[in-house]
Length: 169
Image (cartoon, rainbow, N blue to C red):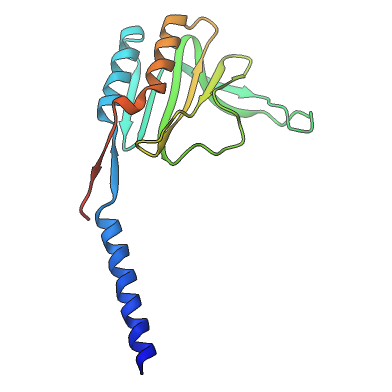
């Protein structure tokens, strides 16, 4: 008789704990960081399209679709796939805040040559926020080095502009 009562008690404790964890869930506030990115991009690319939705920041200007061939790990070439990238004088970037530290295969930061443009993969991590910023920054050969440097510096300092807030669900 005591065992079912004990099991029920433990179950109630676990469910209560899970509900509290959901109620106290932290949401990353990225608005200030998005504003800083917006200011930087608009200064150099006034006609850029910039969108911010949830934890994703995207901007682009003067882009098109390319057919990109990439080598496989075996050294053979894979079939071409369509990829959006910047033309000369253009820019393209996807940034996403992700929980925990980056753990993918590619070492970061790293540049990938796509022939028509380069892609800089970055994933700076904030221990304080327990998030990393996953960045695909595509740029042509004529990108202004000052813009690229300011963008990278701002991205690496994202923690200074972000905060967490508690939600009560």
